[in-house]
Length: 212
Ligand SMILES: Nc1ncnc2c1ncn2[C@@H]1O[C@H](COP(=O)(O)OP(=O)(O)OP(=O)(O)O)[C@@H](O)[C@H]1O
Image (cartoon, rainbow, N blue to C red; front, side, top):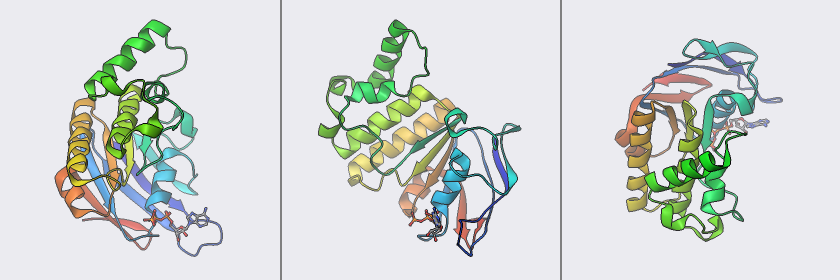
């Protein structure tokens, strides 16, 4: 279980002080919604380690993550767009999810495997710049699968997609979350995304999270 207890933070020069507490279970999607400017990105930055809280704990299965650097945290992040390097192929973007020192043959096998699982084998050598929005999110998810960190932060990942693509990427997120036992946290303004995916919901208002 991922558990945040009183993660307290204030941006310099801002009057709002955040005090975040929440839990996220493995194999489940936990949804967080709240108006623009309510602090959703701030919360993600605290979980990912880009911001340091003034106090509080953030623990995964009892291990405190607060002192871990962003690159070593058990966390992956997927945004609405711009998750890929446009000049690299789909395959090379996915390869960025591999840990350093993976043997070449093993790397090739694992990359080909996740591309196949995500239905992307035919696009492996295509430059990311030439992919559709849905294909790009699929490639980004393939990289996340290769990385396989237990916490997945999703910041409006479906917003730029048409309805059919949105549904198929949503299904992928749900299936991967269950299969990989990820603690997936979804920030979304869309009630239908939340209804389709979330087992647990929080509303962010006035700097705190309330169960919704
Ligand atoms: N680096 C910063 N320095 C000062 N204030 C900041 C900084 N980053 C964000 N803020 C402020 O903190 C508040 C919360 O911002 P945040 O981006 O977390 O909100 P959000 O809920 O993600 O918004 P949106 O839905 O529009 O993306 C806003 O008032 C914002 O202006």
